[in-house]
Amino acid sequence: MGYCFNDLTAACHDDWRGYIEHPFVRRLGDGTLDEGAFRHYLQQDYLFLIHFARAYALAAYKSRHLADLRHAHEGLKAILDVELGLHVDYCRDWGITEDDLAALPEARATMAYTRYVLDTGHRGDLLDLHVALAPCLVGYGEIANWLNAQSFIVRGNTNPYDAWIGMYESDDFQAAMRDELAWLDTHLADITPARFAELRAVFRDATRLEIDFWQMGLDRTD
Image 1 (tube, rainbow, N blue to C red):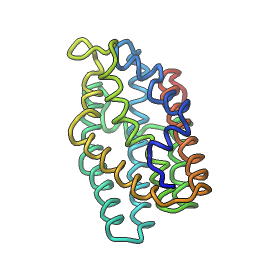
Image 2 (cartoon, one colour; image 1 turned 45 degrees about the vertical axis):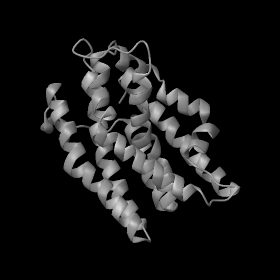
Image 3 (tube, rainbow, N blue to C red; image 1 turned 120 degrees about the vertical axis):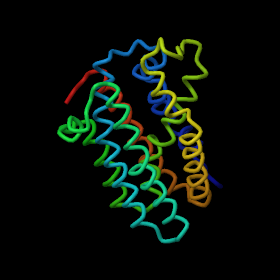
Image 4 (cartoon, rainbow, N blue to C red; image 1 turned 90 degrees about the vertical axis):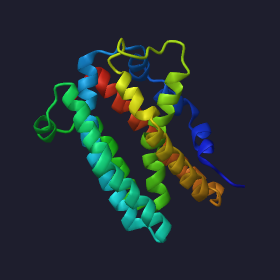
């Protein structure tokens, strides 16, 4: 039988919905999230992006085919040349300077998640790595879409997190999400049930670490 990304989310339904619909996300959507919690998350997310770029560099190294190499290169280039710059600008709007970001210590939730992704990529193959990264790239796009479908969402100037939602509902990010979904669906199509079970465990663990990342923001834990 052929598999696709939706099979992973279905197999990890409770964890996936717990991530997409986390209280941190809901409070982003209705504008009630504590600003200190958001600021803590925002700074740690900068450190995550740096490791995310490293993961795409590892994906390039792991690529056996030119198409996969180009895919990894585009992901790395997008993070280094676009996304990190946007993140720094967005942090500046919240009174967080680039020097502040450079001096940040990593929170334990950040270390746990990023090292898990990198370790998965090192010990596994390219598909293992992409599945470990999927909760971030695919998940953030799905979160923006889910929020926009909720009756409680507040958009515009009355929600201090409106611009955050806007980043992930943007045409560029949604296109990147669809591109990653297409890559995953192609590479999942021919795997065996035993291989799917392995990847399901990777996806479950990465999703749970994303939940911990949200909770870190709420708890403001180091």
